[in-house]
Image 1 (tube, helix red, strand yellow):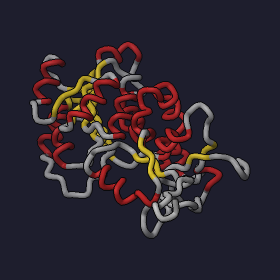
Image 2: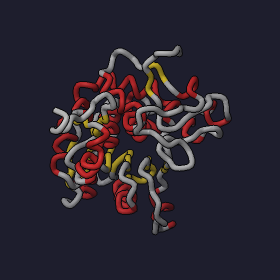
Image 3: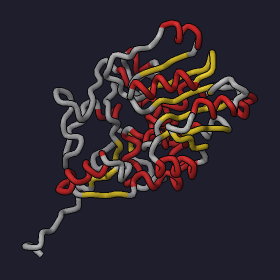
Length: 281
């Protein structure tokens, strides 16, 4: 990279040379730090931010994606890609048409997980309790299931009673993980990319009976960046609605309220936009 290059900066830095980076697990880089965490890297939503390990963290912005949508590549798109691809990307081609995947949570990460899963398997169910989000998941090509309308029974009915081959949990709530365990078939897989902070009352007998492969944890953004970008490039027309809202930093308090109320998906803060008051006009 050179001075003046436009770049995308993942939410966690990576050195590219430690044990985990070489394994393709940059999310646990031994030198890595996370943007937006006090005591690590502050300033993720500021005019300027210093990026350690920039040569191996930042990626030169491609010209195939509109600038506003590239914001997704710092976290949301790679995390959605990782949620879906972790256990699905290595499936034999002859099995993909028969596989059933389920995404729990149809927020921005869930939508990106759906977009990725549909490139890997033929049938994807999407579960949420917000009708607008279910409608968006359906437009992406998923089969919508309302959280409160027996999603487990409906998935089992569609799979001869087995359950889902793969479940992606992107909510980060205990109830969502319990639902994933109910949905997955024996010897299926669950990938949880939601941030869980509570002790989870999971029965050891349930885990034993399911015999499912389970994965948790932070997305290795830098390691999966190029593959996630390929999906975004192909699906950018369908995913453009995720970045349709722009705001100035002055409007950030209201923007956060709108996001918390689920009135919008991702809000892009435009640092070149200066709000003019009536007194200055």
